Image (cartoon, rainbow, N blue to C red; front, side, top):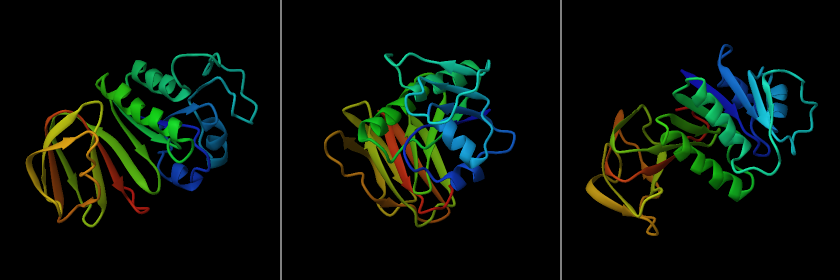
Length: 211
């Protein structure tokens, strides 16, 4: 099952959000994400936040959780945790990039929060698809021509193979602090990434194409 989270980064593409959340999709809003949901014509199922940035009145309802402003986890992480508690094993995040850099990095770390709990999470915008890849074989189809970059994440190095891309690799090492994984290109109908050790952050530049 897939849950959709609308976070609070500034100036999201509301048309992109509304076009990519199914009518029956389960939607959680993190603080200002509620304002974005209203403007995108999306009805939230859960609203969570301290509401320090939301400018719309928050309904008094059972599906609203009010958090203290001084807390350990961000509103977005609380939404991820709620989705996991409800049994969702795939999570799509919108409005999670493009604002304060520390908030964006925090959301990248939130991908690891989900992955550590056995849940797949991806951040989507009209420009990017961002996901975290653990050890194993990962296949990507119909992405020919799109650019992607790979970075070790939460580890000193990752060992991996890349097949079906402009710059192939066999059991090569990507090290933290040496960004040689920037700007590879998908070629052909499919691409395989086999992670042998470590964890890899993958950023696909979608150029407006939902992948």
